[in-house]
Length: 446
Image 1 (cartoon, rainbow, N blue to C red):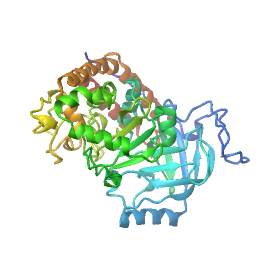
Image 2 (tube, rainbow, N blue to C red):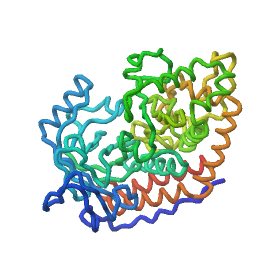
Image 3 (cartoon, rainbow, N blue to C red):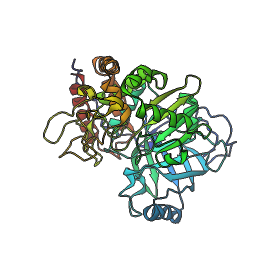
Image 4 (cartoon, rainbow, N blue to C red):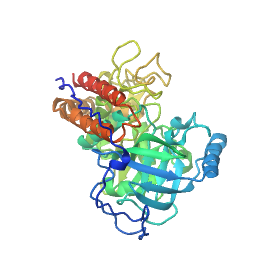
């Protein structure tokens, strides 16, 4: 089923950030020009920071020398240091907040000469002041843009939530630092507080970009720089046990007992979602982007999404969404994965989009899909699990595109950018990015 075409009503009147009214906003900080309040106090607001119908504002006041040294240190050692800054969020001032670079591959070309308003950051309000928060939020990730608007990631995150999966909330934001301002997408950071409010998992493990899902023995030290525990008491034993099972179980055992180790329905939904937003940089992409959440009550792992800035075929080089290769052919999906031969996945066929980690020629989606995650590969090679994935594909395709939900979400974000960020991004660019996404919706709906 094809979705209806998006009718963008782009206003010619572009409102400045000063015209945005956030009436009745109260936060545990200092209002600009006002008196201080208790940083640990409860935060309430009539206009939530995560309201996607408006553009928000974050301004970072950082010492120029400290900022330059932070970038210099990363360039020479790769270390990401925290510095102390003052942060203003929608008019609320937070003293002694923390600022640190965020990302891995997105930082490879960053230098001290770059405009800091275009660099990925993480802001932590409670880094140096206990319990300091804005509307209960302690951490904000200023995402790396894959386009001027970041509409692709904003829409994908809302669709992730519609799918019933754990999602990070997002806000279009006028981000100011070092005297310059850029339109950036700001999202929740999947850490301790996010886990408490969204997942409630016993432990949360982040897969590092240079790692994989291989079993490296039962020594926790072997998983340094492979997984990083983001929430819960330090304990890698549930993770190690899970990795041992998915790697070393024979195919019959994997098929019969995976549901005792993993929420298989959520994983099928996760895989279907990634394909229906055309995101190659997922659990088996080049960035190894994923989290594993462990629930001690059920003894199950859940795969959690992270990083959707390449959704809808966007390129890491900043090209817009499209979802086609350079030769115009569509990106393959997981649905053609064949069955394995032999136990423990030996000689298991690669996914049709697996390039063995080597970028394909002129891939419109930003390069070859980075490789083969053993969990995803074995899951899709199993007949019953593959059928579950196919069922979720059909459900989500109708939920996203048959219902028109994707276009409604896109309309909301686009209207907000036109009204609140027209001085940062031209209305024609917003319309063009939105049109590219509409074309992707129609292709993915088939």
